[in-house]
Image 1: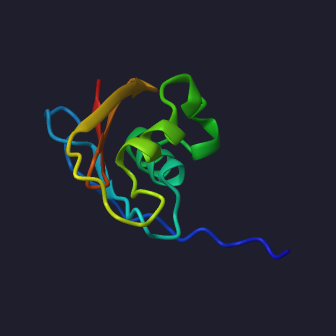
Image 2 (image 1 turned 120 degrees about the horizontal axis):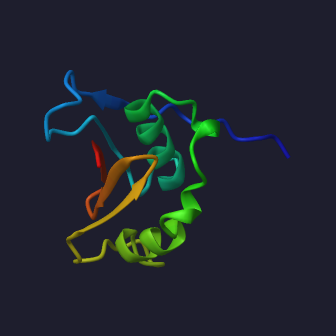
Length: 108
């Protein structure tokens, strides 16, 4: 079986880390090819300036499967009427995952 290529994640970086504004953010598509895990790791890597493989394991801070179950579409494809955010701290940064798929990273 051929390995599926993971599409790049478009990460928006802000100029100043000293402000309360996000250091980096990305939009995750619940029906896209990139996984939520990939989107979170790439956005956090961009914010910290580290390579994704040098970051602490994401499972130490959050259960990504639970995030997908909470915010992702139902088994029949219908979107959930739920809105909200889940945030956690990893690598000195607060990561916020919003129900509509936005991933925002700020300095903790």
